[in-house]
Length: 122
Length: 450
Image (cartoon, rainbow over all chains, first blue to last red):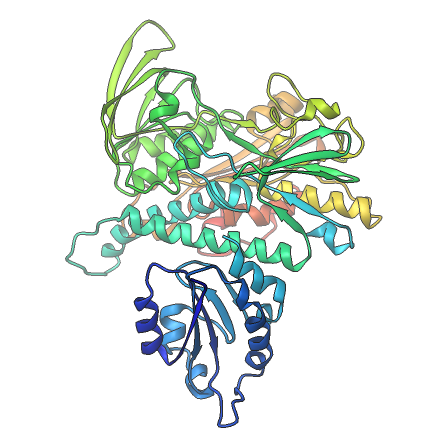
């Protein structure tokens, strides 16, 4: 069946989408919002996204890849935002395998090898 | 990781043979998965239970009865361990260290065969090998042991609360587990063949036993189990244990939900093909003798950690030995691992920190007339208000009279013993004498000032 992508914005939409696909492997990439020209306020996210996208073909069958925009810079800097509180995210970009302690944070997302490891290994 | 820093091509081969009950775990070895880390976290869970009780005396008011959920605790602990396993895999990959989750064994000079869980075999050759396979819990060899008993390998991920538990053994593993299980509110009995904490200062070992007895742990002394039978299946089920006295013919029986074996650990050295490359092992114990540079009798094969003969079985010792070894091999360093004055802590309900000689060993080595022991009971300030025991915490130092009263043994029994001991270990490494200790002003009010 291959894998599919869902694009969401904000915490409630993320949770709803993750719940919809419960039972399938879910991978999520969290990035800062993009402006009208499609550029994110988060420079590391700009670097990481193409690296991650290049590895997507390694996703196991049946997986869901959720591309999630977290919000603007002010929202993200708030230490009490829902992503920090509930998902324990500490930075953007974060790439994780939902429901496991497996994640890559910030510069780790620039490394194709690590992204591939997250997607393909147990 | 250290070797990779020096641009060597490195591979790690790690595989966990599942326990008789099927438990297994990820990358990181015993300490991370089924040792120090989960143990300390569960010990902390038990301490927090005690703290909740104490808190009422300090003015905290809550009407609900406080209960403990084994599942919640275990899930949190396993989650943390999972993040450590992942962290190691990221670190290895990042430093270009190859990792094979497969069972490694020597098949010939400079050659190993790896077999993964799907049975796929591969061969690898290398210039040098480092064996750090560690140990696994020993079983009793009695009917019912592998089918019905659990070990520490199973305990920290047990998917159900163990209930009424019989702990067999008097090692620090046995006492620490018995301690936190009792602290979580479970009915715990410890069956001891002879003495507690063999190899540790016996004066301190007895005090630990006394404290545990006074705080709800039952001890059955001088008995060994001879049979374990299942009365009822379940999670947990009910088990009947039959035991025989070591001092006569008396037989006793008891019923428990869980039987935890903690009678010792055996090195994983018998089935890794060491005979094919001529590495000597102690046939009786399975341990590997090495020189002071961690080299086995085969020059290109080294070993570190719990499998070494006559060396301390502690995580930091193994890590230190490994790092120094690599620096000697690839960075021209000459420092060898110092196995003297290594501090340790036993995380029983009343924690015990020690560094250096036990009283018995000091007497044996230096003679009773040449050592002086200074000791004191103390009452932690935090224990006064909730009326906790005022004569249980204890500290003693052993000094060598012939060497300027140098402190050669440090022992403390009390809260946060590990934290207290670390600093004194550094002082002992510097050769602290009793006079220097006396002239150090104490921090007040803390336990360590004693």
